[in-house]
Structures are given as structure tokens and as C-alpha cells.
Length: 147
Image (tube, rainbow, N blue to C red; front, side):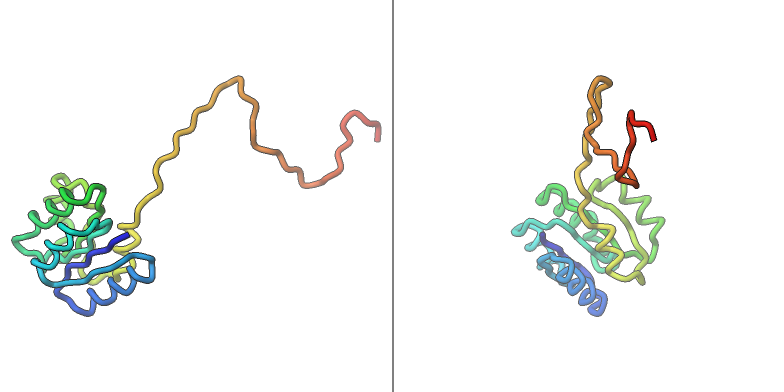
């Protein structure tokens, strides 16, 4: 799985890339919008961590490109204005899974952006016998025998 980190804050970018590598992602970190666009265009990106201040006016275009080129991409943003950015962006970008405060640890962003297991469909019928074994605390049973 591919992680793309777009962040001008080099220390946070470094922590996010290292955390991503430790979590099993192939990770790319950049502060360059040109590099970010090339990665989004040429590489299947599964998780995008980006700083709103780094993207500035290119925020909508970058998120749009990420969703257009990478079906199912999950996006997590760092922002100094969490509530405002979440309200403005969440309806427009279905891949946006969260907006976090700029000071939060990248591990929080990775946890929020981690893929979730597909929902499991369960079908039950009334005439089906249970298939789950019942375990008893004691092995001895005296069914039908006088004690």
C-alpha cells in the first residue's frame, strides 16, 4: 500500500513517512505540489496525509486528483482550523476521513486513515441449527443418569 505525505513541516513529514514505513506502507514525503501531482498521477496511492497550509490554493485540486486517479483513496488533513476545514471539505470529497489539528502525532493520522475491513454480511434463518460449539466449564455431565 502506498502512502503520500504532503507537508512543508519537515519534522512532521519525516515522522509520518517513518511511521508509515513501520506500518507497512511504501511511503513518499514531499513539500512540492509538482512531485505530489506526479505521484498521484503515476502511483496507486491508498492513503494521503496532507497539510492544508502546504496545499493552500491547490487543496481542492489535489484532493480531486487523488480521488479521480486513485479509487478508494483515504485522505487525512492537518489543519489549524479543524472544524472550519472539515465543514467545508467533507461533503465535497468522499475520501476525506478526517481533519486533524496540526500538532497531532502522525500515528493518529495513520490510524484514522488505515483501511477498514469490508463489512460482513450475515444471513440467518430460523430453521438452521447453531454451528457454534457450546463449551462447558466442567467436562463431566450426567445427562439421564442418576447421581
